Image 1 (cartoon, rainbow, N blue to C red):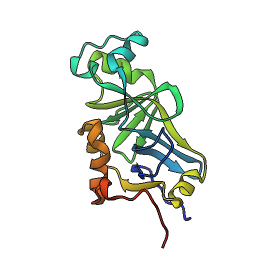
Image 2: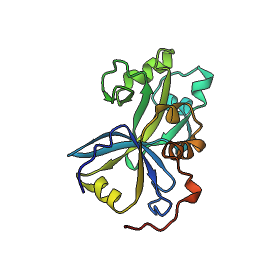
Image 3: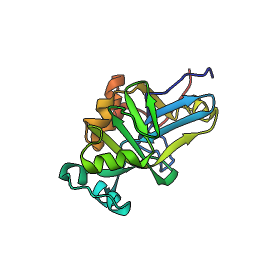
Length: 186
């Protein structure tokens, strides 16, 4: 399979996806190259809130709308580490700028800014990420495990978590309910 760069794309799990980490998941791909791929699952809120998380790292969070936001399960890799998807990108200590539209930051300075009310306008905080070794994602695509579509950050930041998978499907013009559990090749 020819290499296709899926940076700034959504991976939409096909209905037959059996891996419990990714069944019915929507993953935002932050980086994809010959070294592999890195993404964050954006539709799996956990029971933990940002207020709980900030308390664990000794930061106050008194902005009620932020305090109630959930922390997301970003994927099965490094689940003890925080990842922040955000807009605008800004100038944080450790940020990957994704196509000039979205930032993925792993440094604590962004959380400190959020705590002070100086953080990015839009954030999604996750624990863990999804990672693929070189060629692994391409192999999964060849096996029809995923649908792909260019990402629209509004799906991440403006839609409730429960609506994100369907919103990404709508970008393809497809209704998830019409997809078969069986995949085939012509």
